Length: 154
Image 1 (cartoon, rainbow, N blue to C red):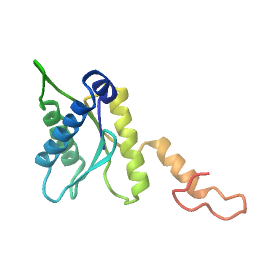
Image 2 (image 1 turned 90 degrees about the vertical axis):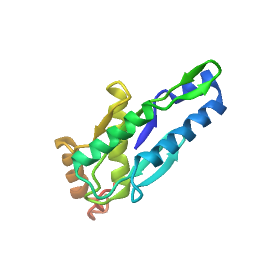
Image 3 (image 1 turned 60 degrees about the horizontal axis):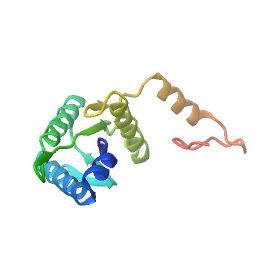
């Protein structure tokens, strides 16, 4: 998952037409930076997702970094200057396959990239806190005494 850094400021400074030009340039660069079997999608606003399969954590990080660097090299002509954009990326391995959890974890990694200064890649790695919460959610009984379905939150 990736998000254009400071995109609102870009739009406010250069206008929505230039913001659209930046998103189009980003989408074109994404298509050129990924393999035919990868799936690239606009997730909303200035967020994009790339589904990459199969890969290892090292391959995932290398691809994400290649995408990040390629996007930072985009130049968008504007009046007498060339504009540029950067993205922050968050990624997660797919196993186990649970789309809402995968997107949530990739989003956590994305926001960690932003918190650490933007224009960087973070790969989600489940730590002890996430494991404890996941275990607790799976084992907590519901109000009726039934087990809570795996992955649900109350």
